[in-house]
Every structure is written in structure tokens, then in C-alpha cells.
Image 1 (cartoon, one colour):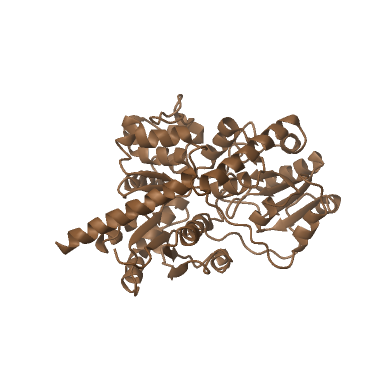
Image 2 (cartoon, rainbow, N blue to C red):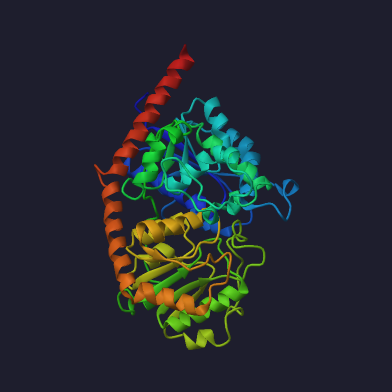
Length: 482
């Protein structure tokens, strides 16, 4: 190794849910470890929100960003192609552009990190003599499931959702059939085949970085590291380096929304948002509106047009712009709630909202980015999972960690009625159960801060990862010179 900074390349797959944690990881490495970071972003032509994020304060100032031009996959998919399949195809088609971009860099990277959909780029890392790692911006529990899924594929007969017993993952809490990730819902779909292949690829890297921390998931992390059956699959080191999330950097001038929050009592407002891609049916939007009104609580609700084809139909577009007031809300709703609530169309500055003292609860789709932002803001949740691994996350929040309530039936199976919604909101905001959850989430916030501080578990794990990367890099260079 020469005296220059270690140079790490992070390959980011399409979608804001992947781009944001990749940028946050890059910034963590650049600011706290004095590492040069270049983020290679596989862009899409249909997401204007991507360009907004890339220009955000936590983006280009600290890391170099190189955009891989969008690829045309229209001839490879049809109207029935699922999101995971589209992501995997996009990454595959973008690999020549990734390779040429790295080859053309004046100072090529020393280490390669691909996010969970970019493991097919590992051969490029091998070609350029870089140690290769996968970054999972989710939980250790999800990581255990996906890496063990190639074996579950052989063990389980029939569809996973039809099983009568929980799925056993060695060393980890079993998984209820109804909580499996979307990719496991149909074994005959290409998405399932892509998912099984992805799980195998996770184990081919030199290590797995996970956006979690020791105190949050001790059992799953122990299983990944030491359970003889699971460790036989995951032989590479596991690095819990989280919780990594966006830093709240409010604009110089307060927005009208923040000014409104400033006028509300402490912990009196519930924030309702389903992430950058989550959508609801027209009927569910109506029930949610009535539920918020019935709860008699202050609220901020980020809404988008009703879905027609599924809860993740806006994954690559982040919705479409709307003019005027949304016409899919109950008649008179905006007028009746104008003093107690705000309805925001499509997007809001989530981290700035969650960190505001007036926020007392968060009705969330349970995307891992949103969960971490809520926990580190000491905000208890209503867990409303929609797609991907969000059902797993919701179960962890409500049953293991105890910082959320959730509907009796999964929202993707049955419309949640207004009475149940109103009761859940009041539970978080007013009832004794909400106070218990708030106390627990405060302790989790402290645990998270301790993990990231110097000498904390995640801090030390990041140090170990960098030492391992440098050792492997020296070994690769030595081998190439023989």
C-alpha cells in the first residue's frame, strides 16, 4: 500500500431506497474514516427524485459520484415483470458501463462494495484486483433469510406461504410463512429465481456489511457468525456497521411545514408516510383519512395517487406530479382537518420532520431506512408493511423490539378499517402502550448512538472491515506481482 487514501467504490442499484443508504455509507466512510469514496450510481430515466437526492447536502460534497447512464430494458421485460427482476436485469445490462467507468478512472478504486442488487458486478472487482463486499441496507434477520434461501429452496415443498409451520433459519428466529419477502411469494416467477441466485451471490464476497448493530439483533448476528449450519453457508465475515441514516440538515429558511410544526405541542403530531414507492388503494386511502379524522390527533400525511397494480408500483418513478388538491380524499376531509392536519403530495423532508419535537408517532411502511430514522429520532411507530422485506421488519418492531403496533391483518391482505386505524393512532399518541413504546425507542436511540461512537460496536466493526479490506488488497497485489 502506498501513502494515498484507501479508495472505495460503492455500486448503487436503481431506486431511492438503495441510493440513499449507499450515499450515507459513503459519507460515513469519508467523514469518519478518512477514506476516498466514489459512488457509481446506476440511474433510471424515469425518476426525477434521483437527481434531487444526488444534489442534496449529504451527497456530492463528501463523496465523488459517477452516474452510469440509464439502460433500456424494455425488450427484456413486460407488464408482469416484478420489481426485483427489473432491478436485477437493470444491473446486468449496466455492467459494461460500470466496467468502462472504472477502467476510465484516473485513480482506480482499491476496494469494491456492491449493494444487495449489485453482486453480479463481483467479476469486475476481481478483474481489477479489488477485494469485494456486499452491503445490505436492511437487517441481519433478512440477511440470514436470503443467504439461507437456496437451502430452503431444496427443503420446502410447495409455496412458502402455504406452509403450516414457520420457516426455520438456523440460529435465528423462525419466519412465519406470511412474513416472507415478496420474492418468495411465487416460486414459478422469475423474481424468485433471481432472488435465489442473489442469495448465493451474497456468500461469494469477502464480507457482508449490514446496516444494523449488535444490541438490536444479537441473535441473528450470532447465527450468521457462529451457528454451524448457517455459518457453513455464510463463511465470509459479517460486519454490522449501523445504524447509518441521513443526517438532519434543515434548509437555511424554514419551510411552511416546519413553521406549522413549531406551533404544535410536543409529541402531538403523527407523521404518515409510505416511503418513496409505497402506494395504497383508493378504498384504503379513504379509510386512512377517516381513521386520522376519528383519532382526533394532529397529523402530517404524505399522500400519492391510489395504486392500480400494487403497493410498489411507483418504485422507479417516485410517483407523478399532481396539480391542485388530491381528488381521491373523502369529500370535505381537507376542510374539516385544516386546523389539525397537513396533507403533503408525493414527498416531504422525512428526516427533518421525524426529528422535530412535535412529532409523537410515525405510521410507516416499514422500509428499513424509515425505521432507522424513526428509532434514532425516538419516535414509536405504527407498522404498515407493503412490500419487499417490510413484513419481516414489522414483525421485528412489534413483537421483538416492542416499539410499534400494527394492524390485526396485513394491509396487503385486507383493507384496514377506519376504527382500527383511529385506535392504533390513539394507542401510539395517547395510551399507556404508547408511552411504553416511547420509552423503549428512547433506549434504542441511546444504544444506536453508543454503537456508532468511538469505541462502540459498529465503530469497531467498521475499523475491522477496513483492516480486512487493506489486508486483502495487499494480498491481491502481492499475488499479481508474482
